[in-house]
Length: 238
Image 1 (cartoon, rainbow, N blue to C red):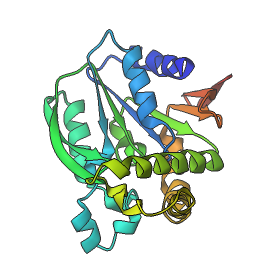
Image 2: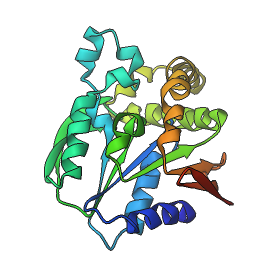
Image 3: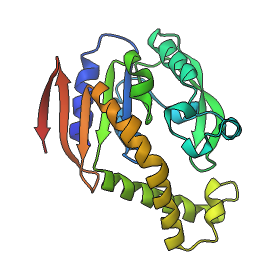
């Protein structure tokens, strides 16, 4: 992702604020965490931290009480006020601040940690642009075809379910009795009923708030990087 991180880094370098706030959004399994890790490595000459918005999901018990457990990941399933308070505090240089940590294995918030003073703070998550785009210095959106996103989600789901065989604490242990075809069926149902509607209705529209849009191929390679400047778009075709 060198071309993608280079485009983002150029905008970070041009920003005079400290810390520079970078937000990375995109559909489920689009590669937001992978991009955040790559960008952090590209900015190794600075103090950088990465925070996931998943930590600001409401507790499962509260989601169940509100009838939102099946809509986990939708805008209403997040504590947006807490997320904005954290990003706003970082923007005002009030770090260190504590943030909740989310586990995709156990499927809920699992503890918290302290985010220290940094030069660049990367916040990644499906809702970061829609919930806190106005507080960011550089907004990034990872774009991919819906079929590719569905395939990447299916692969991740199957891998988590397989790993759960040796992990009693894993949320995915519930699928242990299913064969691979059964697990794939569950993954595809979750994609169609939850992730795809969320993508179309809430996540994809937030791309309009991004300064950088990174288009990916089916093999996760970068196809193009669009850098928006003063209402114009400059495309670097790959």
